[in-house]
Image (tube, rainbow over all chains, first blue to last red; front, side):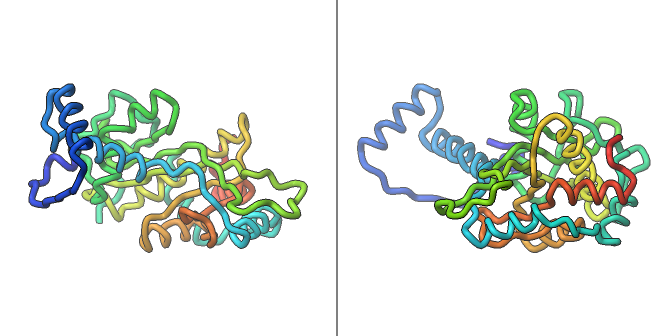
Length: 94
Length: 176
């Protein structure tokens, strides 16, 4: 469990319905890891959820999105906005 | 509103940095910093730069590679357009709640743009992209000329490499 999650009190409940064989599998896996079914379930799910949140690596463009990307890539007319340049000058890491 | 501390430094995340009780207000992002940032740094999946006061981390920003693909079959494909389009993704950017509003996020975004241009010397990419997680994030990136592109899943805002170069040249911070 993450540090951020550990700090909070566990006030929420989640009920799940599952088949006897799924439950037996979870119980077995939890036993192998020397933990409870609940802890096993939550820690596995949190890790999977963090992966989903953290790492979209492929982005899918429909026809309109693809055309918009191509237009941007071919656009030689871009002039940086004064506001953006000013912000970069004010907040420089170097 | 806390202004960036005078001794604030931006550098690559290292094991010497103190993450302490860093909290940005977005639990998933904080969890990522506390649990995943160093392993991702060590494996090379995603490179994190941090803003730190002494060694204490007050903000962070990650870069990794990504791709924009067509979801439909290509018809008349343009000759010069790579498919998929290689991109660099600003995957995570967060500032500790106690330091928000002071320009540290902007400084980290600026740093990410400079890192992108350093990468461009050695490997190809066309887009610097970010997947904003709400209106506040969208307006932040729009302030740096990032363009929202509709029709992409998950949604993206992007700068082309030429745009990043133009911005840094104008700001006088293009890596030499």
